[in-house]
Image 1 (cartoon, rainbow, N blue to C red):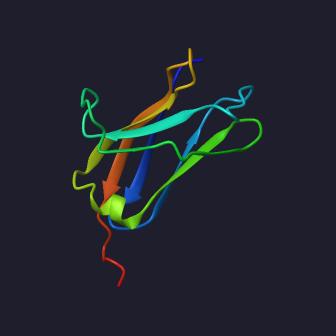
Image 2: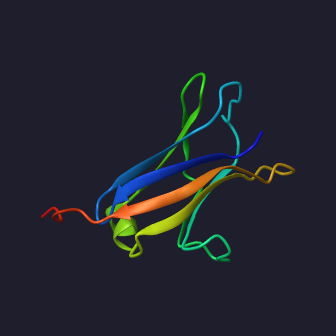
Image 3: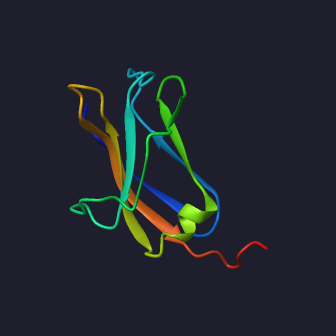
Length: 110
């Protein structure tokens, strides 16, 4: 399976959910998954990473992970690189990736 290229936008300083989609015919239920957010692809230590990924969908699958207000506040650059990996033993493969744009809201909530 080749990696899906996608792009996402979130607002800095707000709770955010990021949804990744994949092709029909694959069921990622039970897979060990890792999401990384980096400033640039070659960065050795991600700015953020999580294994808390929720699997959903039928047909095309969806994977959702959440970022807290504190996590999005720490994203000070306008664009990051996001990657989703399957990390099961013998299956270290990139499933999806692309640009994560961090937008500045017109106002910060009180």
